[in-house]
Image (tube, rainbow over all chains, first blue to last red):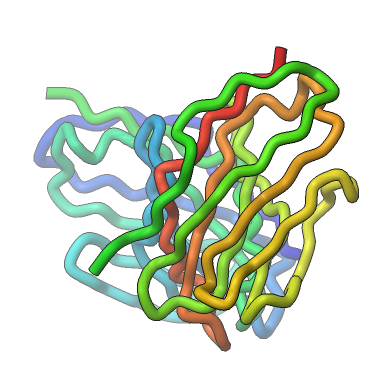
Amino acid sequence: LAKTTQPISMDSYEGQEVNITCSHNNIATNDYITWYQQFPSQGPRFIIQGYKTKVTNEVASLFIPADRKSSTLSLPRVSLSDTAVYYCLVGDTWGNKLVFGAGTILRVKS
Amino acid sequence: ETGVTQSPTHLIKTRGQQVTLRCSSQSGHNTVSWYQQALGQGPQFIFQYYREEENGRGNFPPRFSGLQFPNYSSELNVNALELDDSALYLCASSPGGQGNYEQYFGPGTRLTVT
């Protein structure tokens, strides 16, 4: 399973765009990239998933370069409620065994 | 639509005891996965059940066992509890099949072993 590396923590201010980058140098051809968000004392929540190029949904965008060795989660105009831990996961098509790393603690300040 | 529910919310056990945690999957989901999350760490995959059969297991000893019922609800059993088993236990359900990445997590059961 591909190992992922993310920054331990990031700070931002309300209204700013936040970009969290994840490195996954040994990603396999069949691997997808998925991001989850977790608030304290809650289970993780699926944010977005992609394979290549760019994916956008109502809450975030995911940018994946051609070599797929990294990915960037982009959160537009963050608010205080976006303060959470964000996990980058890489795994095969079936996604049967989600492997979570340590995640990135995002702190949004007013 | 009812989400994933887990019971109990909190539990305190003594080392050496056995514990059973329960999970009700989201309606229409036939796959349930269990995770252990220690304080300050990401969730660690324990095992997954698909249509009542174990469908993958993480690096956990055999004293961690599970069960999935015909209604797709699930149990996690842990025997011979150790202090290091203290953690948040998360259950997640999904529709199953290919592309099983969007898993829906419950709020978890906080287990404390003393």
